[in-house]
Amino acid sequence: MLSEIDHQLLHVWGRRLLGREKGAPRIAVVGNCQSFGIAYGMKLLIPRAHVDRFTIVRKGLSTLDMLAKTLSSYDHVFSLEFQPGFVRGGGWEELKALLPDVASIPSIVFSGFHPDTIYVLDPTRSGFPIEGPTGPYHSAIALFAYLRGMSVEQTVSLYGAPLFEALGYFDVWEDSAREFLELARASGLDLSAELIRWSRSGPFMYSMNHPKAFVLFDVAKALLAKVGMKTDPVEFGDFAVDDIVRGVVFPVYPEIAERYGHRGSYLFKRSNYRLARFVGEFDDLRGFVEGSFAVFAEHQRAQLMTSRMLEWEADPTVARLFDFHAADAITKKYARA
Image (tube, rainbow, N blue to C red; front, side, top):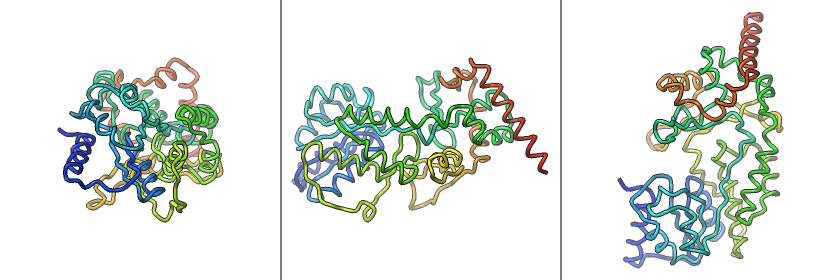
C-alpha cells in the first residue's frame, strides 16, 4: 500500500514530466503532521513561490535515494527530523548526508499545558501505540487509577488542583519551555519571543506535540528569515488553515489553564478526517475515562506499563495520593448531597 510520501513523489515526477511546475523559488518541506502548517505558512509568506510538502507519517515503498533525488532540484529544502523505517534506506541523518544544505525544522513539542498526557507503547507489538478515545494520547491519571482497580467515578473525582499539585503538574512549564527553546536553537532558531507571545494568547497546543496553526506559521517565518528569504507582510488570521485540528484535541484542564491566566476544559475531541461527511464527536471527562477504561481492559497489565506507571508504582507515596484524593472527593460529594 502506498504511503503519503509515495503518492507525493509520484505526483511530483508526473508533474515534471508534463512540464506543469510553476513558481519560484522552489521550496520543499519534509516531515510529519506539522509539515503542512510549515509549508502553508511559507506559501502564504511568499505567494509566488512553488511549495511542495512531503509527508512522512507512515512506512512506504520509496527509498531515501528517490527522495533525495527529488529534493535536489528545489532551491530550499526544510525537513523535520524523522527516524529510519518510514523511508527505505535511512532517516534524517542519512538524508542530511545526501543533501548537506537541507535546513532543519524544529519539532514543536511542549508539555506545559498537557502534563498528564502520556503514550502507551505496547511492548508485545514492537512499541506500537495503544490508541484510546484521543488516539495515542492517554491520561496518566486515568491509567494509574485503572491499574489500581479504581472505578470510573473514583477516577473522575481525581481530576482537580489538589492531585495535580501533588503530582507536580503545575511545575512542568519551565522545563517544557527550556526544552522547546533548546530544540529550536538546535535548528538555528531563537523562538523565545514567539514563545512568550504564544503563551500570552492562550493555550497554543492541541496536545503535547500538535501545535495550533499560528504557531507553525511563525516557525515558517523564522525558517525563511534564517535562509535569507524575503517575505510579504500578511495577517495569518485572514488566511488561516488548520490541518492539525482535524485530529484529536486533548484539552488543557481548567485548573492548569487558570494557572496561566487562561480558560481550560474537560472536552476531549476525537479525530475526524472526514469533515464533509461527519462533524465529529467529543467526550466529557466521564466519557473519556469510560472510553479509556474500555481500551485498557482489552490489554494485559504488562502492555500498559509506561515509564511513568513504573515510576509511580515504585513510589508508595503516589498510590497513597490517589487513594486519599479519591476517598476525599467522594466523601465531599456525598456530604453535599
